[in-house]
Image: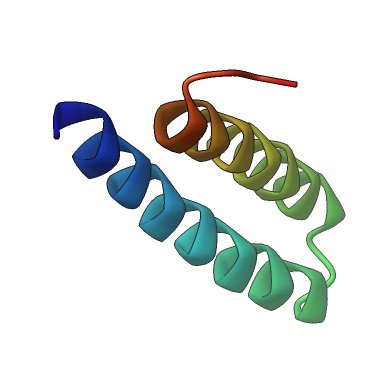
Length: 56
């Protein structure tokens, strides 16, 4: 149960990071957009790990 809640929370954070990265790219703040893309990817990996309890 705790892992699925953590997975859901990180999936929500991944969505927020994707939306924020898209807005940063529109405003031509590419450094900030890269940081948000990396954070979104990390959150995606963490949510997969939390749901399936394995990385690959």
